[in-house]
Image (cartoon, rainbow, N blue to C red):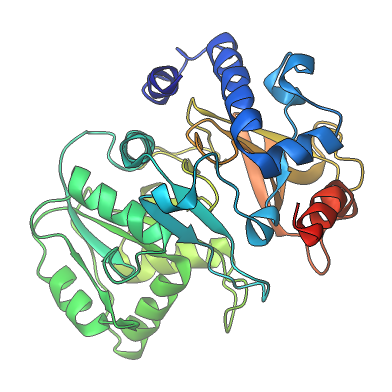
Length: 355
C-alpha cells in the first residue's frame, strides 16, 4: 500500500486517474479502520465499514477537532518519530498528529513543493521566516521548512527567526546584497512584520529576477488582518516581487500533504490545487452532504499520505469549488458547525466513558 501511495505522490499532472486513487484509498480505509480504535468507533457510529464502502467519497471524514480529544493513530504513540501540534490560535486545546514514516512525509512535501515553487528543479538560496525544526520540534510547518531546505536549498539558506524574534535587519541586509535569485518562505504575519520594518526604514528592496515567495497561514488571532490583495501589493512595493511569483500554501498540522494556489512564475487565476495523493470534498455544515457547485461549504480533505492516522478529515475551513481546485473563505466562527458536532457525539461520549 505504501508503494501505491508513493507512486501517486510522484504521478505527473494528468497521469493520475481516479481508479488508482480510489483503490488505494479503499485499502487505506480498511487499514485505518482495523488499527485505529477511535476512528473505527466513529465510522461505526456513521454506519460505515470497509465492506460497505465502494468509493473514497463514501469514507467518513473525521472532524478535525477529534485530534484535540483523542490519540488518532494506527500505531502506539511511543513509536512515533515526530508528534506535531496545531498552533492553538482558536483558544481550544491543541491538536496532536503523530508521524511514523518520515520518508513518506518527505516524499509528499518535496514533490509538491518542487512542482509549485521550484519548477526548474534547481537548488536555490532560501530565507526562512519561521523557527527552525530544532527550535520548534512540534511544528509541522518548521518540519516542512527543514525538509525543503535540505531538498532544494543552497548552503547559504538560513532561518531568520530565533528565540521568537524576527531578525529583520539581518534579513534586509542579506537581501540587499543578493546577486542571485532567492525564495522567501514564512508565515504571512512574519512577512507583515518584515514589511513593517522596511516601511519604517523607508527601505524598499528589489530582489533579483527569478526570486519568489511562499507564505502560509492566515491572520486569525493576530493583531491585525491584511487582505490578500493588499499583501500582494506590499510584496510588489517592498520586495519587487510580482504576484505570479508569490505563492500561498495551505496546510494543516493534522495533514501530511499541502496545497498551493499557483506555480511560481505562471500567471492565471488562483486556486488551491491538490497533489495526486489528495482529494477535497465541499460539504454542507449542517447535513455534511455535498453542496451544489458554486456554493460555499466545509472542506473535507482525503490525504493518502496520512497513512498511520486518518486520511479523511473534516476541517473547520470554508471553501468553494473552482476550476481545478478550490478557494478559501476563512473558518467557521463560534461553535463547531452543527453537522460536525453531531458526528462527534458518539466519539465524545465513548471517550468520556474511557472506552
